[in-house]
Image (cartoon, rainbow over all chains, first blue to last red):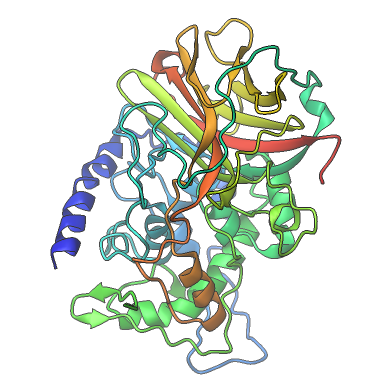
Length: 242
Length: 221
């Protein structure tokens, strides 16, 4: 199909960006990585569920968190998620997960790296299909300010004026509402009861491992729902039956 | 034409049959960060959603000579709605370049303010590296000061994602994404775009980490 071929070509052109990430220092997370990886028990104790179903196995998602994103020189999925920041290696080409460009298919890429065995499958396995829309509905601008103009005919504020009045209150006078680093991490991998503390936290909190049990629990639940189907489709999940 | 997404792995199409009673845990009704946390920003959960402080997305990328970052918020929204320039919200784009990925060396702060006319709004950006004092100017235009360029305004929502498929997936346990169904198509939001000379961010071989936060003066809505 022409459309799919064109898309595949476009995505192939993205692949070198990942390959170029080999310059990422392997030790960039030397302060905290041990804490992060240690939190999910390497040999989890089997937890018999009260209502087991034949089709639903239990899974250990530790291999998903500890697996390296191909071509990044040791950058693991856990490193990408904890701390919850966009990370850029300026020596490598730009493009998710090396920072984030406007056209990057970040959801399909994220689904691949948290569910699939990356020694068997590309981070672009889903994006190559694609699962989700592969591009924005309108074209981005090649130059500043990059975003597409607003659609429709909304009221637009004046582009002039002066003597604007701004609050001069110190940051401490404001109360946190929202935070974001990596796309979809706070929304997909943090459960309802942790959303408020997660959005109130900082990367300094992330690297203590505070949210690793939650990330692990949510990923485990998702894996239990999807692993059979990934396997049936000929894909190898990163999670291991436990 | 309805066309269900199929995972093609070799010749095998992926058919997810998890069971209708199973609901995927953890998957909210939001997307990149739109309407998250729901308890503060989602009108279906919160009777006083803080639209202005609801981060939609964060982008950051480098070129040969620039470090560009975009923070989008208050979206997605209908195309007949104006931008959201709330003087009581503090936007922070935090950049770490000292090698410790969790610290913040460059806390860029953005505020909006009213002008003398009802349709006039200004944007103020402080802590821009290499910029003396605050960068200030009107929204909806490019503002340049000491080599840094800023533009705040109403834009198309740049995110693309099948939110309906996501919700159906969570409801049914069946993978229901459709690549030709973009929930964010034809919708707008407000954004802050900042372009900084790369050499003011780059610090040897250190990785650069970026995250954003919003906060409301005097407490949450």
